[in-house]
Amino acid sequence: VPSSSESLESERITYLGSDPMLFFVLVGLVATSISLLGCTGALFESIFLLKLFTGGIMFSLVLEVLSGLVVFSLRQHIKTSLQNFLTVAMLQYQDDLDLQFIMDEIQAGLQCCGVKSYLDWKANLYFNCTSPGVQACGVPASCCVNPLENGTILNSQCGFGTLGMEEFAVQSTIYLGGCVPQLNRWLNSHAGTIGFFAVVLAPVRLLCCMLTFRIQNTSNKRPWRTSSLIPWSSRKPL
Image: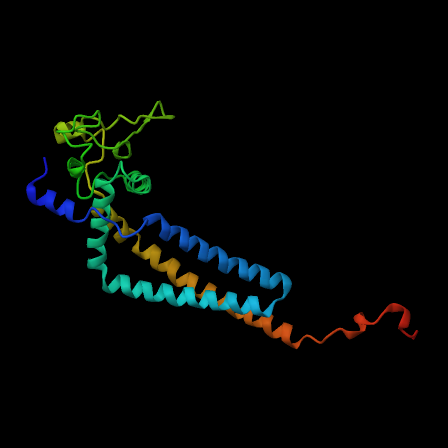
């Protein structure tokens, strides 16, 4: 059972300011809108749309650079905020489907369980060993090493009863490590790859902006084809 200090800390951070899925939706909408501006502007040779596309590309590039600097300078604060977010997602696992989806994806993707360890799920009202429900003393199926029964069907009860067992007895059934340490290890091992893609994508975006400027200049310098506007019947033969 979690200590009194852990319970007080859990109660203190059980609120999120907004829906976490809203951020991903907004990012997707912005990226889609910028891409649509570029495609439409190139298709119809619209200078106005191409300028909007260029501005969107430049704005996103500047925003990514600033975000990288902020993340680097506030990495310790971000780590604490991430830990608090995962704690909220764990405590409200059954009450918020969005948080449940995020927590399951993180645990299954990083092969982890809980925030710092699988024992953190004791702080959840439904998974606590004192709970009268069927999930008492258990963890979600996303914590299981092999959640699929016969390789095809999800066994939602694969983590039941694991909190009441010894660690050596459950290490082959569920992941014991928490998601925050696992995420730190993943970031440290993939920092070079992330930096490489960030360095490569920046020139690609600048190249897109240069090509867009070239299209704009070409469209501005293109002479008007006034002869095509003259009716065929009024043209004089050569």
